[in-house]
Length: 254
Ligand SMILES: [Zn+2]
Image 1 (cartoon, rainbow, N blue to C red):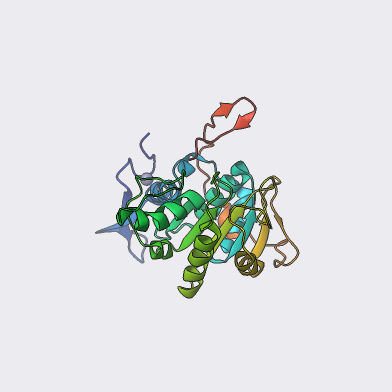
Image 2: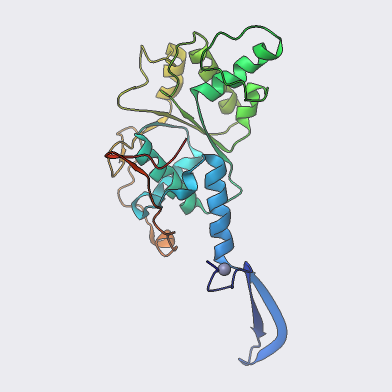
């Protein structure tokens, strides 16, 4: 559907008003907000396939503050997706590059070096379609989000690769979110756990997003009276249709 404000052109033209209130013959051109919304949808989709179809929730807009911090998130898929989508919308900066990856992607990139050398890759989760890149490539996004607990087979190098990625990003002064879940918490026995990884995550802020109103855990600064007046006026996109599988909402995210 075409934008009612700009007719789909992406910009609005107006005759400039003179100091006496009359219109001059000069035409000023302004970008229309629909263009920003389109750019924000593209940003969401590039960050995580399917994220642009997730609705924005007003109660989660303040999470934009955490987009530039190291955070250890505990979340189910639904609450995590709603929070990330709302935070990015609130930030309103389509140039801020976010990438959501999982352990399989970290390992596939790391293993691709071995694969390129012609050696046999024995990790059953190895994705041969991932082009060979250096794991320093994970330094590129402004925010990298690593979802843990996605990988099913154990590879002894997984904790080490996670630590490498976290340390590289810290060295580049770029924030990282590490996301685990209640049923697979990041602790001893977790496929990606190591004492070194544990030590790094202890320095991260902790957010529990498993409840519908996310809780900031005690070592994080209080956010109770955060001012949302500047963002509340922002129009919120249409509520997305979600795919229901049984009683689970899948959102169609990968
Ligand atoms: Zn428009």
